[in-house]
Image 1: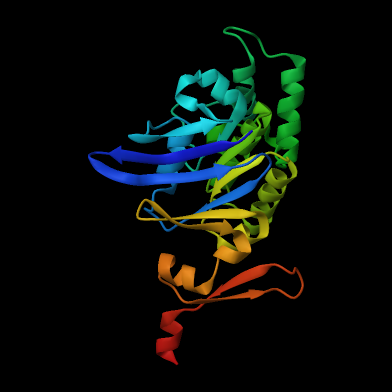
Image 2 (image 1 turned 60 degrees about the vertical axis):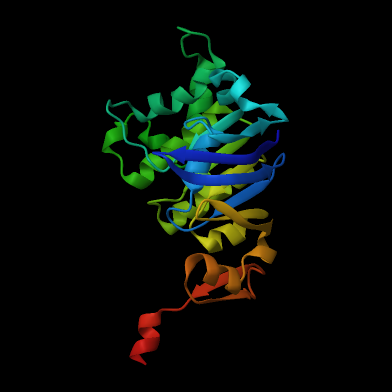
Length: 260
C-alpha cells in the first residue's frame, strides 16, 4: 500500500501550519519526517490519519482519496503510534492492546481466542507481556508508548504512522522499538527528532521547516552538516561510523567553545 499527500495544507486558528506538503510512502518503505519543534510534523501526520482535515490538497491511499473511505476501513490499513497517550478512563494493558482488534470486528462482537493470541503476541514483541494485567495509567511514559505500539501491531495493518515513537524511552527500548517496526516489513512514516536513529532505520526522508517541505531524498544524501545547520541551527559533524558503516551525527556545544 502507498500513502501519498499532494499539496496538503492545514490551517488551525486561522494560521497555516502545513503549507502544500507533498510526500509519498511506498509499499514496505521506511520514511522519516524530520524538522524542529513547531515545524508542522505532527499536524501533517494528523491530516494523514484523519484527526485533522486538510484545508487544501488531498491524502491518497493506493491512489484513492482517503476522505471517501470509512474510518473503519482506514483503521484496517493504517496504525498510529502518537506521542500523547493520556486517558480519562483506566484500562488494563491487555484491554488497551485488544482495542487494536476493533477495526476487524462488527459492533458488539466479542473478543475471540484469536484476538487474545494476537494481543499477547504484540505485547511479547515489545517486551511487555508480563504487564498485561496492569493498569495502563500506572505505567511510565515509556511503558505506555510500548503498549500503544503493541496496540498498533494488533491491528495488523499495512502501514504504520509514528509520531516520535521513541519519546520517553531508554536507549535499549528505543532500539528495540525501531527494530520491531523495521522487522514488520510494512510501510512506515515516522516523525523523528533523533537524527542518528533516522540514519539507522530510514531509507528516505522529508524535511519540514516552518510548515513547508524544504528537502527530500535518500537518508545518507539528505542528512548533511549544511542541512542540519540550516534546519536546526546547530553545528555538527556527519561521518561514517567505522564499525556500523552508518553515518553518525556528532553535535558541538557553543558553550564549550566559548569556555575554551
